[in-house]
Amino acid sequence: MPKLCQAASLSDILRLVSVLKFRIGAGISETGKVISYCEPFMPHTFDAVLFDLFSALLDSWSFWDRIARSPESGRRWRLRYLELSYRVGPYLSFESLVAKAAGDVGLAESLAEELVAEWDQLDPWPEASEVLSSLAGYRLGVVTNCSEGLAQRATQRVGAPFSVMVSAERAGAYKPDPRPYRLALSELELQPERVLYVAGSPYDIIGASDVGLTVFWHNRLGLVSDSDSRTAKTADDLYQLGQWLRSGEGR
Image 1 (cartoon, rainbow, N blue to C red):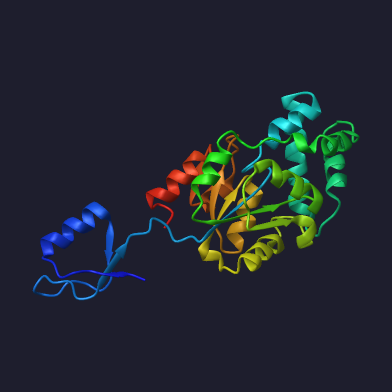
Image 2 (cartoon, rainbow, N blue to C red; image 1 turned 90 degrees about the vertical axis):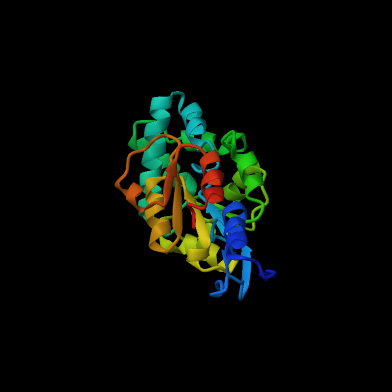
């Protein structure tokens, strides 16, 4: 509830607004007296922040590079997997998509089994824990393209308290199909305009924005995409997410 303001001169109110960033609730009378209320200015309008898991919060790129034995092979494999998963629609086995992606780029399909076996070696981006801790005023969640079991294991690697965790398997479809995003919104019991989505790939930008979510793109690798025009902000690290929200640009 807004706090009632004591009557004050116009100059006092303007000084209060400029220093403390208060918002006038109704206005100032012709005599320079407050006639309604004022309340602290909030630098954003979001109640929750949803994250892509494997690119926005976790360094899955380096992980895939290691399993593929080289950054070049890992990048080709990972990008092909993203292409397949974002086009498949209804949920298919995550492991089968990973194996097909490997084969498509000339790698052994058995690498998919190795990837899953090493799953608990996934690491968050270095600043992820600090940034998530700074978002304590928001409800947090993840929406990820994998099986339920692997999603739970990967989420534990982040080490943050999430209100919701939606996997492609549980939603019945892979992003950018609207079902995973809508399931997360349903479980948050929030409308899209009250939720910020932190995307990790261009395909994710399309899916999230299509359901009405405001999108912040954590573009760690400097990927080029026409979808960038659909984001509210693009940054190459997570620190800029917290800074953007605190600055008021996210309103």
